[in-house]
Length: 166
Image (tube, rainbow, N blue to C red; front, side, top):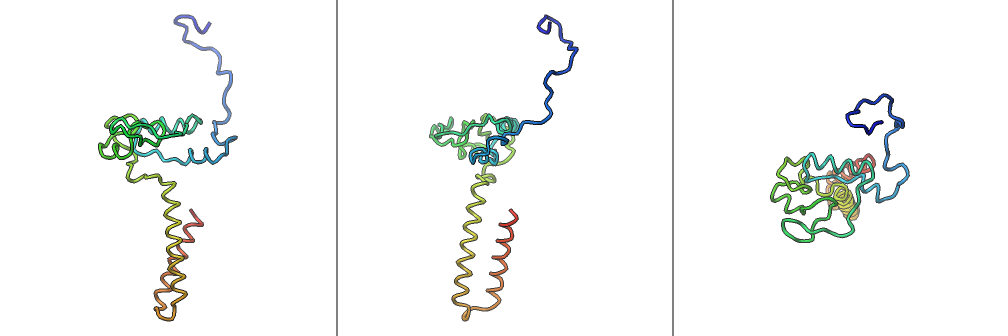
């Protein structure tokens, strides 16, 4: 028997051999699952980042319904699941936001401020600002130089080109 003491040699291969890897978005194609898959784990050490990525990969990652209390400042400011320290405290103290140890932070918090959300808001702001500039340019094109309108049109085209690619 395999439960005998000292019996560590196995004579047969594994009964169920996996032919394909697990895919967390095979059946669950909801917006919630897409948000979890796109989440950037910043402000954590390498070990904690690996743990969080494993949770996401095997559909064990659960979002918070309401903010948790930070162990440093005791405010309800922790909005990321499995974190114990809020973003400002972790950034100020230079510690991992999940385990609280002074390890090397893989992706600093200030660089990764919700990139998925900030990219969309930046694109919307740039797009609306350039459209306003072009509308202004179209209304008063007789008073402004032709060079200025050409520059604005090139900027607008480059933003639209980036938006279609990304």
